[in-house]
Image 1 (cartoon, one colour):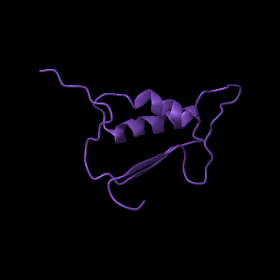
Image 2: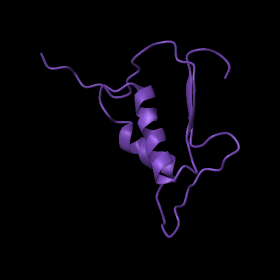
Image 3: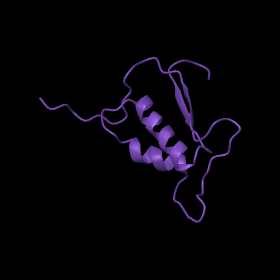
Image 4: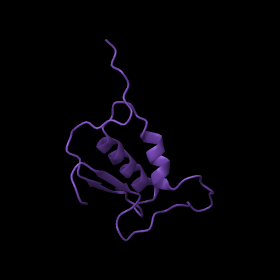
Length: 88
């Protein structure tokens, strides 16, 4: 990855195909997108932690045939995509 300050998440490891259609189902999204959409709106959670949960759930659901890959060059801690105000 060129340049600092970026985070790129891939549905699977390099050279491994993503599992987009589970056997016997007609899904709206592949496994990675399914779990990313489930967790990306978690308030006050760092994106790295969200992607860690996504990676774990994709790995479990695919029986280890698909493991998302993340290239992390972020320079700051606690990158939130969905913040909720803290109560006083």
